[in-house]
Image 1 (cartoon, rainbow, N blue to C red):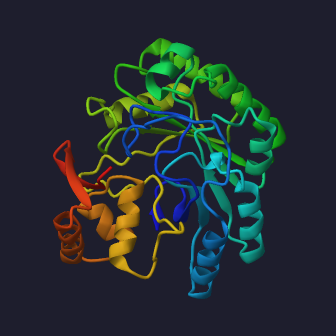
Image 2 (image 1 turned 30 degrees about the vertical axis):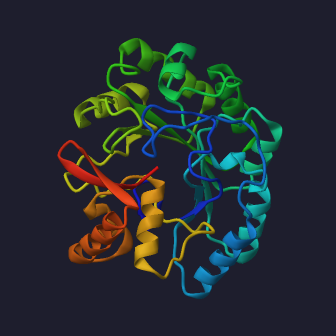
Length: 310
């Protein structure tokens, strides 16, 4: 399904909901109950590969197969094995959407290096701001995050697209922007994507930046920077869309919708665009899921978003 950063993206979920190294204040999936750095086989990859094979047989077309999901994908210890399996099935490029916090580990770098594009995050240039925004597991610091990204850059011949999420009043001062700019120079990514909150977040008081301010920050950070947030009323932008995890049934619209909402809150327009269905059909599926007590609605900046109940 369409993704602002990746074109037509087929997403894969390989960790359970909110299994993550961070508890970011801006997360669209809510709070992380307990952060972790333990790598293990959280979800089996065989059903995922089987679904990809089936989708390809049915004519799947995508610009990228994106390994992301509802938690931190590098926590799955079979990540490299999964990528090897995908390579045997298709030549579609593979992207990994990660917070980058485990790239200081050699095994994680080796797994991620099998992808074509790695899309890590960096929201701060100092420890205090990192703690305030990302609320990491106790063993993770801004120092090992930056060190891991720099080492990975030296080892990885593919593309690194760094994402920075700006929160008004926290990492938007001139001092913060200067520090982030210095870190960008150290990491030397191929692209830098700037984002801000347009959907409901873990902390409901998160303030998003205006389009003008984000563009101004992009100009300060340099020519590699691009604003990826969609400020249009329809909010058709989706950070990363479809889910081909073990629980999905990609041929059923209602289950595909539920899969989307497990990943992040979506508006009716998001649902229509993502699933290729009419407004009335989207309302029908949403109404049924709400009636069954499976999803709930939330409002941000005058737009109603739907999300699964925790």
